[in-house]
Image (cartoon, rainbow, N blue to C red):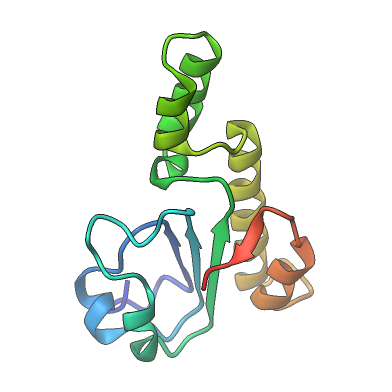
Length: 142
């Protein structure tokens, strides 16, 4: 994304910053949504790369999530636990205690609002748009 001008903004869903973006940074808006368990897999968190990112940074965290909450596995694991096919502890370790439908709804609504603001389909800036959503599970990523 950093070498091409076509993408107007970026999103990182609970992943490490890798490749040229980690070295060169971005000059465009970047929405970052983390789980309760980031940083991940022995990678540094986002903070070491913030100096190179001169664009707007919107770091958030969804309370009650785990890394796999940002994949299709979230819905499947929740259904397996509800059916009694896996223990609740396994479910919580994989996707966290948050209701899977609520997590999906939060991700969809925040991504939609963010891109609407970035692409001018909203009357507010991306930061103000995110602030207006103000859902209790969405916390600043510190």
